[in-house]
Length: 174
Image (cartoon, rainbow, N blue to C red; front, side, top):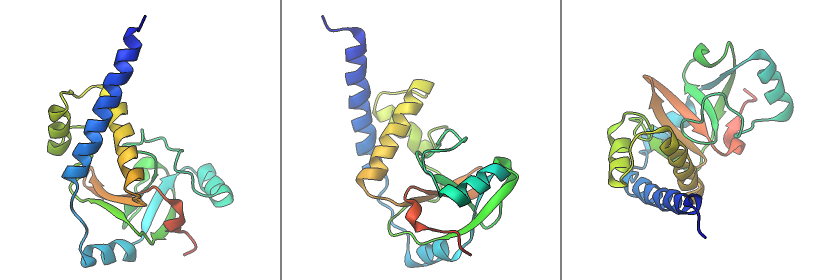
C-alpha cells in the first residue's frame, strides 16, 4: 500500500521541477561588461568570528557551512565594498574572478516578500510557508548547479552581496 509520504515526495519533486523552470525563464539577464568589470574590481568582505577566520585560513573556504539559513543556497556570503558586522565581528577581505555570474541586482531571488518570488510560487500553486522554503532552496541550488554559476550578485537589506558557489574564484591573498 502506498503511503501519504510517497505522494508528498512526488508533490515536492513536481513543484521543485516547476520552480526550476520558472527560475530559468525569469533570469534571462546577463550583466553588461561595465557591471562585470565593477564586480571583479571591488573588494568583498566575509564577516565571521575570529575562530572561523583562523579555520578558513587553515582549511579553506567551505560552501556548506553558514549560520545565515543559506538564503540563496549553498555558498560563501560576502558584502561588497565594506564589512558588515551584522554577521560577525571579524572579516576576510577578498577579490573574485568569476566566470559565470547569476546577476540579480534587485534581490528577486529572495524567497520572502518579493514580486518574482511570489509570482513563481503563485504559478506553482504554492504559498509562502516554511515547508516551501526548503523546496525553494532545493530548486535554486539545482538551478545554480545545472547552469554552472560560480557566484551570484544580489541585494539584501540595501546591501550589495556576493554569494560564491565555486570557491576557486576567491582570491584572499590581497
